[in-house]
Image (cartoon, rainbow, N blue to C red):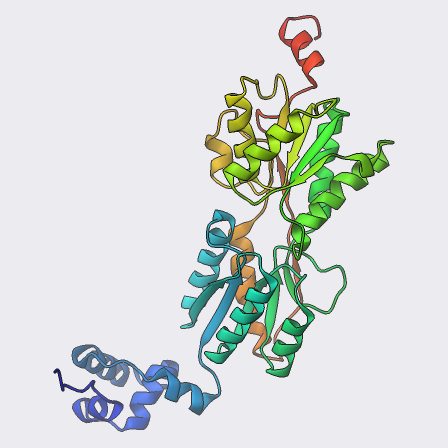
Length: 350
């Protein structure tokens, strides 16, 4: 059995010829230490392989310098982009990020919130605003600051960094109608405890109503955010009577799944049916045809979440929520309805 003990703060102080208080300042407030002393202590830390006792530091400072990020799933790259930016920004401030996922299950999310709080996190990133009331109450009781992301909260009290999902969906639907489509359908994400998916559906219906069409009659299938989910939902919708000429998908993964299934069924996109996505992840630009989608600034969101979380720990800082803007990204998967598409292709329409 290895009985060699880890080097202590006292060991570093003795080897460097300084006090333990000086070592502590070098590690926690290096700007308060002479450069020559700082170099001597840090060289000693590296040579001895000393690792600070973070639990003891947390007790002394009432901070763990650890934040949490609770996302719905680790299988969707949209969350990875933002979390990577979040982690990079926090790392620059010497903060460790703990990541957990809920699999879109509100009870599991609440359990993960409690688990992260038990590990002494100083602040927490959440995705979306809709969750169990007891989760918010738990965070309030334990005085854990949090930021909701991927959505703007419409005047609620929750601090957020996100965008208006409804407005982004309205923008996409408007462009589709401008192409001449009137028979629309939608493959949405699961809307239960998912305000982002719910608001995207609302945006489509709202736009249809605005243009004299019935949003209530919009054919919708909710599906998991997977290629298979998108494919199966597409096949069900396209067999409708009448079949849609354009299908709006709740994200790019669903849209690519729909395109793959259309190709398997021998259909041309956009000649036989137009398909649009949402998010503008890398897959949108490499799929054939190139996907028409909405760009979400994921990396900017991750950095802005980090800044707001850092500010929430300091009451004198700017703690205003941040609303980001989405952007329509034209692609090749959206065209006119099939009849107009064929006439245009055959040279009958200019």
